[in-house]
Image 1 (cartoon, one colour):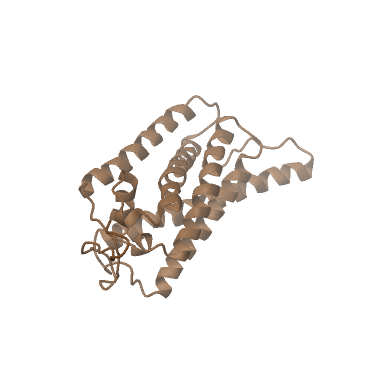
Image 2: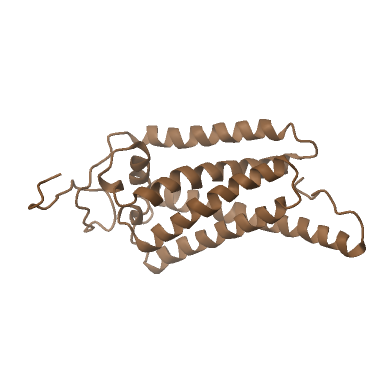
Length: 234
């Protein structure tokens, strides 16, 4: 960093819009493949570990086990990766910590993550410190067959869906100006595909929770024993 009397000048950056100013920016010293390999290998390990763990729980079908695996991955991504952003979003453009470099790589698909955009900071902070812990709690609730497990599934999934709809809609309102529109990796894979997972999967889990909670309420209305969460995905 320069002395207090001089301006901090950053390197040329790869982000959009091209006239974006990022004082103090430092380009990543890690290649894209190593950053993506970390993200997908940790997520894959969590999926595999949770799958094995759910296999010890009686009565969990393949669909339900996959849903629990999803919440385990969400707990990691929300709590660790997005948690890092919520704490260090101002330092990320010039920081070379691994998770900061991960965010600088992702920001090629959405530069709001290197500009401390107000909506993005607020949305990611809520996601990290609310949906992260609640995702972990949802995993535990299903592993222990807690009666409130579908309530947690509904709450977390609804929060994820709502946040992602706002995320896409605010960028649409900005004319998709924070990425190279149409780029096969940065726009279609980073921005569209990876975030669409938090549209499609939570929407399906909301419907699943609705069905299970409705079945439990019908059983309660009839005075019959409440069902144990058997549905089409169980």
